[in-house]
Image: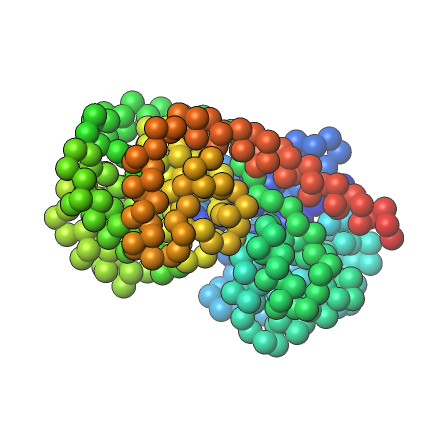
Length: 372
């Protein structure tokens, strides 16, 4: 089976992380030939491109900022010449296969699109929405959603219920050679917790609320403090500056930027914090579960399908500073932390291993090919 995945870039984000893992795992399935196409060029320093396995054929089309008609033309011709069995697009790469889908080029290719977030957020342009809806409705493109919440937003936005839900996954993660240094730098202390937040510093991640909640905990609890590391690309300068202003000289909170070795930090952390306004099915949360790092999350999007409060993590009742502080306090007061961590690992093993996810994608592709 000749499989092509197309994504705008391989920059450090959840969807990009997932596509790398999915292509790597699909390439391990016997008699597959996997291509990963990035519309834009990627450097090793600020993308996941170096983590792509040798079995995956990597191609970059060097797309310029904004809509690039030249890239559209090149991809149209490339797909028609390659004649893949499957083309699976992600995020706004969908629009760069429009001509192939419209003209059925090549006629033997089946098209899929993975919706990584709320349908309305992923495709806010009404004209593009109508184009996608037509393709979905006419069975030209098979939509893939990543959670029951994502499925609900797809139905609400497009008025369709013909999507296929396949949850995200991650491989088992192994510590790197940097772990000893990290253990030394962030040495655990009896009177401190180490909390992690992993994700781009952007508005939807709501890190300002997280910082304020941690600061309130540190003021209210005399015998225990929370040390918080915020790990992720510092891209949106206005948001970064607001967070830096909140943190100021706070000795317990650091913005440390993007890191390749998240597993090392998770292996020494007490809890993993997501304070987001919305999440699809966060890859970072899957990573936390796999390492037994207890999640403390807002109950939004696909998170509620992954975490059961006080069973394999803690959920805030609302997306408010007060409610999130209550979730931190529930973690602090829990006498069942070891069992909750073990339950998190079991959740990962049973539901969110990339091997299972890739198998589900492969079976979907095969089913579509055999049904025509």
